[in-house]
Image (cartoon, rainbow, N blue to C red; front, top):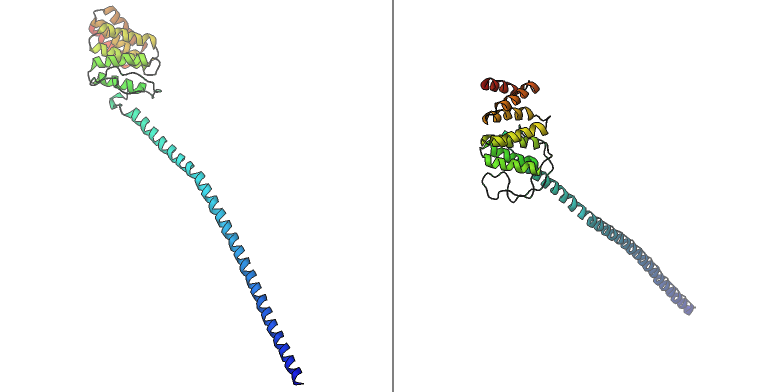
Length: 251
């Protein structure tokens, strides 16, 4: 009877021991499964983050050159604006406003007198606009440098024959000759303005100065003829009043 009781206790103990070990195994297995699932989720998040970072790097690499190009274009536009401003204003003088005209397209001209002080053509300058070339020569005239003015205006009408400043250049070429007392050439220049540019605003002044130059040469018939043209064709001009006074002097 006692042996049977002991056997039952032993079997019961083994059963309990076996059940405990099995429970531990199940718990451990479930724990490992949970850890593995968590690691898998972490890995997925890490992979997603890495892909996002790589995508951002590619966008950065693409946009960086674009940003640099836009910055370069902005700087280039500022530089071009500064060059244009310098080109239009560097040689301009307040005294030139009455003779100034809209800037003409730049054309290349060769230097005429290298190293000459007050030269109308700037040496070593690859390109100059008609406005700048005209203003340089006109400045020479205003400063009494008539030789330089003549050379400058001669070069201007040769290099820029079809600009809005061309009639003015011919007129001031005549004025430069007149100041040099070269009346024959002065008359040629004034006649050219009146015949080649009949509708230009310089025609009344050209006819008046033509009359003065003719009077200086002793050709009073030609002088009176041109002075009368000023009075008859341009009666409201300032030159018409001057022509009347001159006619009264030479009669």
